[in-house]
Amino acid sequence: RAGSDVTITVGAKNETFALFSAEKPHDWCIPFSVDGNPPPALRWLFNGSALVQGKYIRTKIVEYEHNSTVVHGCLYLNGPTHVNNGNYTLLAHNPLGADARTVLGRFMDNPFTKPRLPSGPVDRTASPPSLQVSVAVALAVFACLFLSIMLIVLNKCGRHSKFGAAVLAQDDDIAMSLHFMNLGSSPQSSAESKLEGLKTNFIENPQYFCDSCVHHIKRRDIVLKWELGEGAFGKVFLAECYNLIPEQEKMLVAVKALKEATESARLDFQREAELLTVLQHEHIVRFYGVCTDGEPLVMVFEYMKHGDLNRFLRSHGPDAKILDNGNGQSFGQLTLSQMLQIATQIASGMVYLASLHFVHRDLATRNCLVGRSLVVKIGDFGMSRDIYSTDYYRVGGRTMLPIRWMPPESILYRKFTAESDIWSFGVVLWEIFTYGKQPWYQLSNTEAIECITQGRELERPRTCPSEVYDIMQGCWQREPQQRQNIKEIHSRLQALVKTPPVYLDVLG
Ligand code: ADP
Image: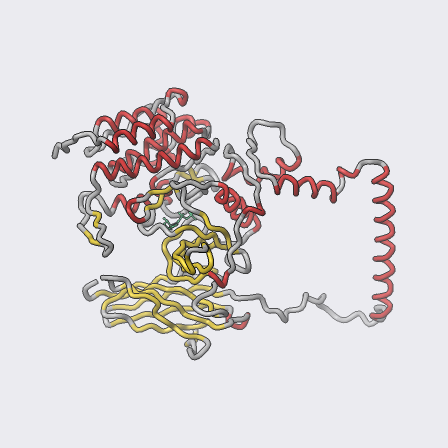
């Protein structure tokens, strides 16, 4: 940027940000990015006072972005303990401006805090400690004896299945075996009813329980580089990962860090990891595993160089500059053939999901990722979102729905099926041929709901050949059964990729 003030990213203000391994063993990194011209001077505060840097705490610029004034760096802390927990503020200033960002660093809990003793005056009439210990031991022995007798009696009665040990074993069996289970259709077993709470994300999707299949990656093998984006779970970082695949000592990966480790967030995290382990296809983003030794919990994915498809489409629209990215690949404005290639790849991923009877429920270009050579993959399977929040409509409480991508039956009755995914695929096609416009962008959420439920259709985008608009309209049949199936759509798109229709855009 020519002469500009300063902007910093170090995570949102006051956010709890547990940190993980960096360059050397025991080194932790607080990642930051700074943009400014002339290059700004950097200074750190710890809990509001100047942070003294030296051998164990130091700032390092890790990477200078090519052709840009953005720099990425780390505040390295070597072997931090609970005394290093606190607020870290980065101050950056140049002659044109200044900026500051604060994150909360939490490395470990204080190992010396004892359980709280009852407050108030000491009761001097209480029995001496040795007597207390004897009474406690006697009580414990008595309780054990009583329990053993009870267990023997109950075993003889053959009623063990109602008791803890037996039920646990049952649950374990379920947890170990990988199977599809439709929560909606069969009478609920005790294990199924325990899963009631998970329904928000995975209802109507097959449930996969394969805890032992999830690959675990060591935290010291993940070396953070910088932030790529933010999603519902938390931040997404670019990182280097060691010892992931035999052919390469280290490789670039995208790492999703779980924002808050509440019990329900952990449960969702575990579920998503199990599900992702099972979904393997060339057009589904590759999932490498999780890192759960310490905080934050992270998921490790293949790195998709060009980020999410919506952003990619927007930056390759009519105003796109011809940029050479240094690899000899240059993407200017997307051509018809490239748009068809993108659509065909998403359709291929959807054919795979449909073959597993998996209902995505949130298919949209924001949930697809673009890698090198225009490879596109479906990359997101969670339902709730907080970025792109204007794409979602809050329906009472916390439920956010992507109404602009939903067919009438999903809006009216919350019915999500393979056929409702087809409708969304039609909207994705429309997004591709409008270079990432928001469907019904001219309408408010309530107006969009009215239009969709009354049967109005999105208009044919200017650059869209009638052969492709026909496919979109096939996806938008009001009756779910009348919609084309995804295999047919995929074949039609494949045929169009081979012989693209001749199309002249009529400039209006
Ligand atoms: P969440 O599932 O938590 O909502 P997202 O998957 O939407 O998170 O990720 C947020 C952003 O991070 C995306 O919009 C994208 O820009 C970036 N991102 C996510 N995964 C990758 C990846 N594998 N490679 C490159 N960028 C990614």
